[in-house]
Amino acid sequence: MQQFIISGTFKAGHSWEHFTKTITSQNESNAREKVYSLIGSEHGLKRNLIKLESIIKE
Image (cartoon, rainbow, N blue to C red; front, side, top):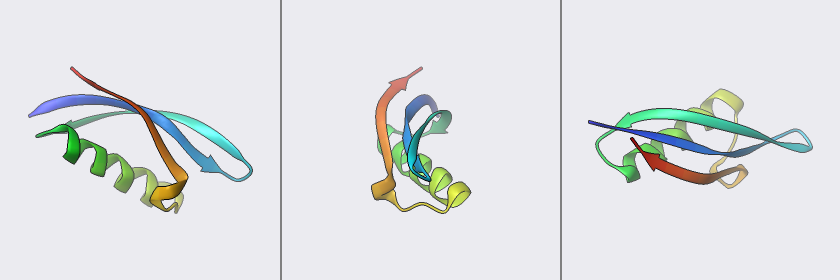
């Protein structure tokens, strides 16, 4: 398993909030899907309101 640091922004009301998550996953694609799932469920957002800016493999 690899670790990925993923940062981006999500829509919070009328503004965009910055986030950084560290995800353990088999590959980058699965890590990306996990972040969409986590942010979406925590804040009740759809994927089009979440923008991933960088993915760094540790």
